[in-house]
Image 1 (tube, rainbow, N blue to C red):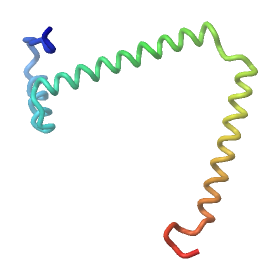
Image 2 (image 1 turned 180 degrees about the vertical axis):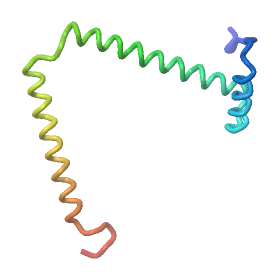
Image 3 (image 1 turned 90 degrees about the horizontal axis):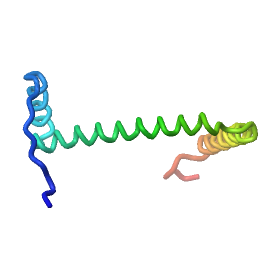
Length: 99
């Protein structure tokens, strides 16, 4: 089975010139650049689809009050802990210095 397919396409001249400038700047072949661009679009579409599925599921099963309270409390504890770490780090002597 072939691992690649050759494709001939027509694109506007301004797009062609942009592609040529980009591939020269990145020092890649036309095929490599187009593969990167197309894979990027595939990834973007996948993320968009996942976000839609997440939103649909959330609408069907929103978080409960208990879950919301747990999230708020966990967040508060996390931010308090990180604030304490920051204070400890500022109070500690600089690394590599004699204490």
